[in-house]
Each structure stands twice: as C-alpha cells, then as structure tokens.
Image (tube, rainbow, N blue to C red; front, side):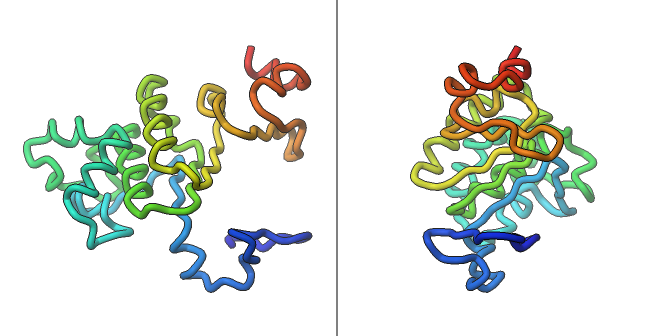
Length: 186
C-alpha cells in the first residue's frame, strides 16, 4: 500500500488490502529492492532484522538459499562480521544476497524482488531462483527485472513499454506473439 489503487481493488487471499492494517499487510510481504539497505551491525543482525527470534539454523537456511552462506563463512567472524553503515564494506552482490536472505527468513506470503539480483552473476542468480522456487512454493513472487534470464520461468511475464502494458503471457506465449518481447530476448 505504498499507493492505493485508483481503480478496482487489490486483493490478497480474497481480502481487499484497504481493509487490512498496515502491520497485518506488511507481515505477509517482503520486499528486496535493487538498492539494498543494510545497517551498521553484524551480518546476523541484518539477516534476522525482520525475525530477531529466528534460530541459527533458520538464518543459515535463508543465507544458503540466497547464495550468501559461502561468502559469509569466508569472513573470519562469519555471521558475526561487522557490516559498516549502508554495507560499505561489502560488494553490491553481497549486499543483495544478504537482503534476499533477510526477506526469505520472514517466510512471506508475497515476495517482491525489484531487480534485486542485478549485482550477481547469472549462475548465482539461477541458484537463487531455484532455491526460491522451493521455499516459496504456493506463494507469490513479483519480480521486476531488466535481465530476461531472470523471468524466463515465470508463470506470467508482463512487458512494459513507456509505462504501459505492451504484452503479457508466459515466455513461450510472448515468443510467439510479442514483437517487443522477441526483440528484448534477442
């Protein structure tokens, strides 16, 4: 509800979001922006921010799914490694993976990923997508992406052109019927 709909309604499990409190709605949603926001503290505190009561095992599962566990364990202090303000002592890809782990650990019903794997390589992104497919089974993931490989397996892809929906469908459907999508893919 950053913005309310100007027409129609937005439903989550059949409930109009306008009838939900902000806290009730936010408890069901996790957002991973492209520009990751980390705070001064440990990696553990950054990952568990939305669930401070999470166990070490839950934190590690989330970090492994986000492909962050390996680089975290390469630090001498592991999960207790200090993160500088805004994550200035980490690479862009490392910050994004910590943010993805932070979202995963909350076990959201809806996950919104806004170009949140743009700073990782395609192989790492593929591993993250595979892990998310398993962890988010039966849940909803919205992915905003510029890299076409990010959305190839999506149930539904929406192609925007100049702020308007130009086409929508699966990858196969769009390859058959959308010149814009074919051009992007090529």
